[in-house]
Image 1 (cartoon, rainbow, N blue to C red):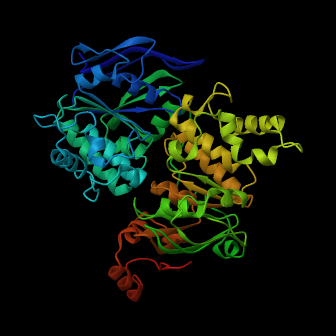
Image 2 (image 1 turned 90 degrees about the vertical axis):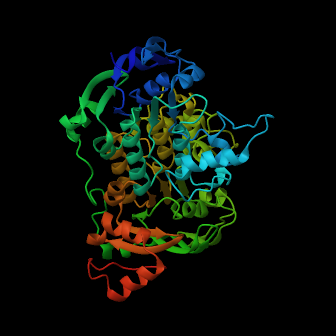
Length: 530
């Protein structure tokens, strides 16, 4: 008998059948992937196993015990842990307090033992990232480091519930750098070797083939197949997911067809001079019309902080931002939006979407004033036409434009956010991890839409931790290290090796590479100001 068995699981949200009589078995100590397009039911099945969702039908049995579905406490006590794709944390509390909320250490008098709390948190977190201060408020960390803390919390073997038997990881590396993701995957394999079953929900094909033993594919809420990873290739897996074969994006596949000289002749649409903040150390750059410029680097290097500063989300940032030659007010997002700058943030839940408004209202909210009638009333007819077009163009799966974003899958929430900016009269768009939580088929569609928008004159500044994505979309790459731009890469110099080299290089190594003209590499244009 299977160690973990989800049998005949069905779940409906309104008119959407998220799961339809799905049965999947999981073995003890295996890493078992759940894959499928956005809305296929992967996360829904994982959350049903963990007790977060109450299925309409079906059972889940763990090690011979039938779990109380829809009961988080019972599933947790049985040994099931859930690591959400969205950050489910208390940002006002410290890292240590967040990691011990489920089991606060107390002395015999009932008082909290803060030293024990910090020690436990440090043991868990530092296994993933030694640089995280467990006494710091969680809200001060980048989304990537907050994700690391959430993952660490699921690994606690010393809580009252005991050692976890099953860990459901929902897109666990979506906010992590390459090095952090590799470290996590090594930990996942170690946990599996210790007998813990890992239910691994991910869109990243490389991770599936690197770490997973078996993979189950869902499509439109139905079971398609369970495969041994070693016995299947990527195109076949993609075909099972979406019904057609799609190859992985290649280097510069979606880049501009223009030469570097032709791009350099285009007018400057975005200019940043001397941008400084807690994380930024005098960043300067230029972005030209029709150009996609990628920002490479490790989590914490300042990429997301730079986008926040440009869009007016960092009140402490100091520097000059010009859009189409005109300086803008960066004290709030109002100045950037008025200058036709769009922003797709990494943290869509806290920074991007309005969960009390409808899907349609989310799409057009920044532009409602422009769509209003002469009397200042909402232009409902204009809004409806734009909303219907965007839902169709970006294939956002929603029962109705009036439904809230919370009813959508994570991938459809991301497509909603992208649709807000790309298909409107935007001059510059800032994309921070734009395909986070998006399936492989939709990723290629997003790449095409971004390139089409750039070809029409949109200037794009792109942050992505997925190297193939960064290299496939970008016309050139600016590498950031420790709050500075450490290199500009173009043409044949745009490689993963070069990005990683300049993302980790210190000042002495960089000076040495410049003096020696980097003899082991093709020439690289060093830049501290672009």
